[in-house]
Image (cartoon, rainbow, N blue to C red; front, side, top):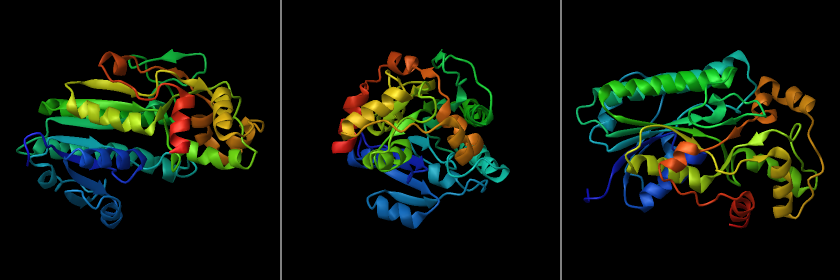
Length: 308
């Protein structure tokens, strides 16, 4: 291994954020060990990865051999929160894929002879109170509801690594903007057919972040001596009404057709809370630690994503 090259483990590597991170790490010359539920899918997406490991969050033990001698672990794996209605079964998967999966990775790191020096664990802005009139940062208190509970328990599991003297960073990620996946991708189709518009009241805040910035932030957390919580959101959040207007302007389409809250509640059930509510989330500590965002203006971000 070359002097500056790092060996980095990435779980959840084939997800939206994972793909961006892994490609950046490979391009800069790191050895990347890819953890994915589908080893075959991972090999197709990342033909130049160093190693491929089939990930199963239920499997306790045996992960140490893959972590030995690694410099860092970036842990992203978890069931898609919006991957189904929030019935008991889906809620259980969302919670356990994060808590059990994180516990297994943390235990493996602590049991390794040559431990990684840093553990960067995904988290979510769902941690915070989502009242529309609130401005929150990394020091703000936990909210209520299913998502807040999930994130709190997830972070509690990750914090158990502190006993092993491994540096830990939790990145509370907002709405990641990418044209191929996630919230923006789902909004594009109605706009392209001239029936796009804001979701819900339009007064809720959108804590957005460009896909390039969020993947850069995870790598920044690996490379720099940082500990604790970072908010993975743009310094300039916007309200849903403004997001829809700017998206429409970027696509040269109107933003006229609001989707009422009652329809979102009918279609999404309890999960509609993630869409119709949202507080003003600021990346105060992220900026204090010296991270430089490439995309701080929503129009600039959307133009880059949609014309790329």
